[in-house]
Length: 92
Image (cartoon, rainbow, N blue to C red):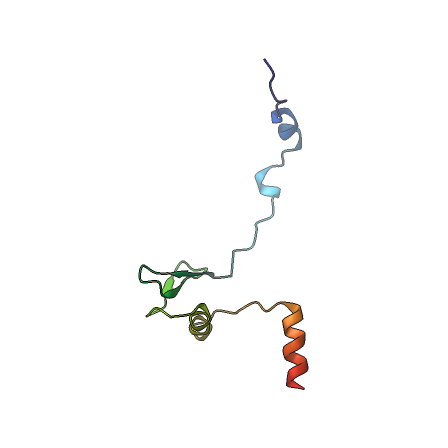
């Protein structure tokens, strides 16, 4: 019978008392979800770091419209660096 080696011995050897562990910072970001509803319309939902929820009040024909509405509600869209450069050059 082949068994994988147990790591319990090394885990005990490397274990630190819980008092010496650093606490991880609380998650501060909100969790945004974009999806289509049963009618095929785009909707957004968000769970904030404090546990509160919010959602779009209506469905949208396109994802772009949905993201624009979410942005008005606090969503921050990540823009790839190449696109940021293009936008910045066009604004000058």
